[in-house]
Image (tube, rainbow, N blue to C red; front, side, top):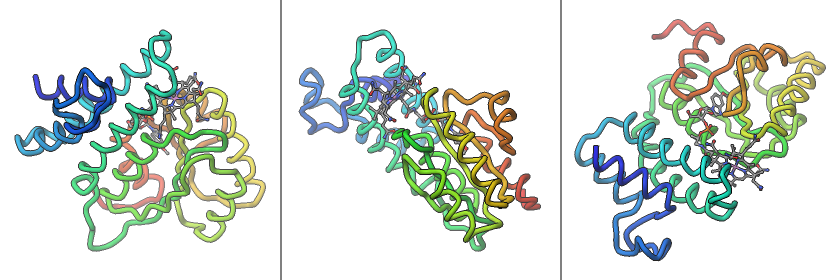
Length: 225
Ligand code: B1M
């Protein structure tokens, strides 16, 4: 679909909206915010806007970074533009349920600043009826322990995007268990595999935001489909 291709391109180029001066060759053209709004007006499915447009674009940004075509500033600009689009989707993903099903403590682990995936998982969980306590990025193991000790029934969700920081999930889980907390724990993020999740004794693993709600319901034994 042409509109989604345009959206993907706007993410790749980091063009936030029609008034944005960056990049100069796209000045005056619709940006991520305009195109997400247009897609919503045209009733394009949320998952198409999200997976094919926003995430599809961001995956190409990652490839360009790997190949040396992009550097950190370009990644940052694209991430900012993508966040503008996600903000528009948030109210549609997060609806207010009449009754909260449970609590999830979410955070990106120590040393890691990536939060787009974590935020998306958080939105899905909120939309699925969970209260989300978002600890943000670069969350120390001690912080997870402190908050979990106040919420012994909560599910803990950890995100990591770097091969260097995924090891901090292991450290966090060890500290949680050393403190005799038996909260269920799920992990995710681009470099995480099921094998790694098993190795660090996580209770669940997901490589996408889509299945996290069902996983949370199963782990917290919530019978509400
Ligand atoms: Co960074 N970065 N980055 N980066 N960045 C990656 C991750 C990288 C793969 C790029 C690449 O080389 N191709 C690479 C990591 C390589 C590696 O470790 N092997 C990388 C690098 C190297 C770095 C720096 C070290 C660069 C540098 O400084 N030299 C640096 C590290 C900073 C730090 O964290 N300490 C860095 C910085 C940044 C920015 C700040 C510029 C920016 C982040 C902005 C932000 O998040 N606010 C950024 C970005 C944007 C990326 C890429 C391009 C996109 C990440 C993203 O948001 N994807 C990324 C390449 C890529 O992933 N393709 C890259 C979209 C998002 C929706 O997907 O987060 O995977 P994702 O989440 C998914 C699933 O993984 C899953 O569900 C989500 C939705 O489906 N999921 C979970 C995530 N968490 C979950 C938790 C769950 C369950 C599922 O349960 C709890």
